[in-house]
Image 1 (tube, one colour):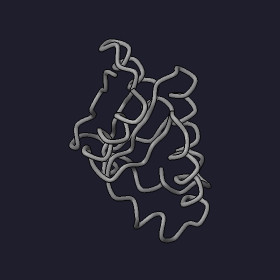
Image 2 (cartoon, rainbow, N blue to C red; image 1 turned 120 degrees about the horizontal axis):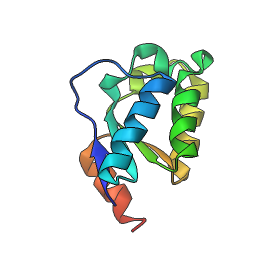
Image 3 (cartoon, one colour; image 1 turned 90 degrees about the vertical axis):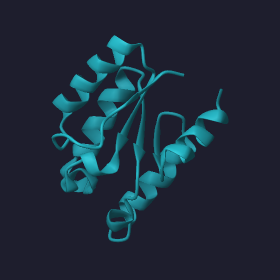
Length: 113
């Protein structure tokens, strides 16, 4: 599996147009997954009521690009039962994962190859 690893530094992400830009980058590398550090997202991305996460992730799913959000998002899940449920449900699937670090991502990928 080819993975596009997004740099930890750079502009904050979260919009649907950001997702489209990343899909283009992934296609250019023939990547089937994009791994994005959690700190690259705007804080409101993790507030489900904004719909940013839903729009962003749906765009990737539409293009059949898997997404891994890498890093600690506990400050968001501690205050949102809905987000905790979304993370748990996503991690049961094959398209959107929330992982603690790159090693956890590698371990998860090893279970599907």
